[in-house]
Length: 277
Image 1 (tube, rainbow, N blue to C red):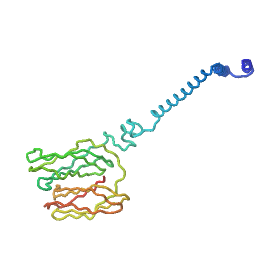
Image 2 (cartoon, rainbow, N blue to C red):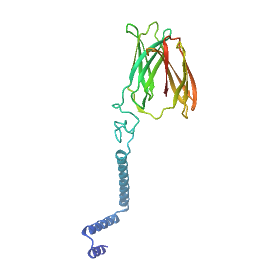
Image 3 (cartoon, rainbow, N blue to C red):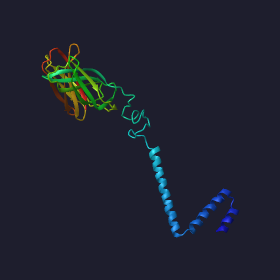
């Protein structure tokens, strides 16, 4: 074998590097042939272990450095404007989201010792909503002493004005003169898809403000669960009564809704808001 290799080197016009490579391979063959059976088996196991270790390294590299960006991977990548927000993610970044604005808050006597509190909230995040946002109503008397507070949570749908109504607040023998509304948690705004195609028609308000009826229509192809909120206003635009109801409007159908109150003098108009859930 050595003579053959020597002849090939002398008679072949190959470069010196090629000859050295062949000599190295030949030496490896001699070394492998010289190994005992246990040595060969050990070399085989070592080779297999090396291949497996190399495959693990390739997997780790592709997972950490070449994986596609996700909106749940806990880091800013891709087109994101922050960690898992903005860009192609539905979550709106805190630095971009605008806080909701309280337009007004009032309380109305619903029955003896019982009040309903209501507030109008302006959503300045077009096309975005927030779920389970914690709020607090605080009711004060004429001496600015706290009568009672009521905490709850509300979904803020992607509509411009959102009524928040809290009925059945017991105030005992106190009289409420002022109402404050505030959010106790930071809304997590999320871009939403298309809303159910709901509309309000045939709205009728009794002259004494004791009854309001309307028809809710659903032009979509699936049933729509929604909160219907009604607020009555006087001639100065001041809210005088409020109520809400959660209903399911059938697909491609209509649903009548009716709200009733004690007679409320001075009421001249009503607003009905449909808030999809």
